[in-house]
Length: 72
Image 1 (cartoon, rainbow, N blue to C red):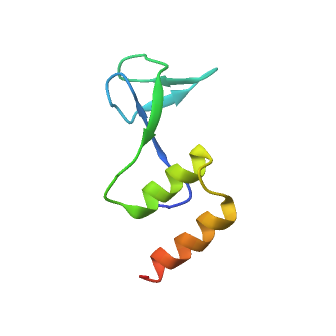
Image 2 (image 1 turned 30 degrees about the horizontal axis):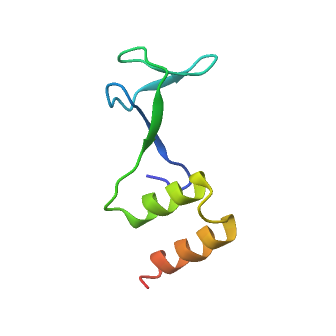
């Protein structure tokens, strides 16, 4: 699994199956209410979510990602 993107999920039925039409649509229930599937036990997922939300800068993200990958 690449660490360059966050997985998406439907907020209505939690299905990870979304299809891009004019906008993202859940293929399971048809909902257009979607969010990110974040594994709270995976520090890299949490870090990516902070970057997406704008809590940290790209430079901070890259620095912390390196530290995580180096086991610090």
